[in-house]
Length: 107
Image (cartoon, rainbow, N blue to C red; front, side, top):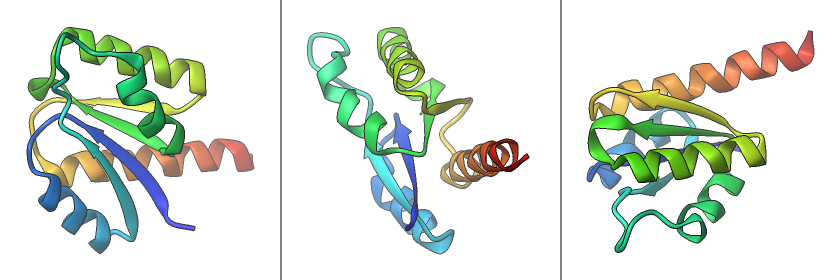
């Protein structure tokens, strides 16, 4: 089963998917922009499917950040807050967070 990393924020969906494919992981992408503020129903399906969520801080609103943070806490999904918009670093951060979680579970 492929690792699933959710990326919230930005506009480089194809780039994220391309780099995800190189790293043998599936990318679940949401640009982070939602009409009338962030709603839980917009992000909940993505969070539930993900092994880890990476939030690109420079590309989303505070409302979106807080909504995703709360959902990840409720669902027990690791969340990473990434400065900048870099696709490679965002995916690498997600993979490292998942690897750390797996090491902790195995110990």
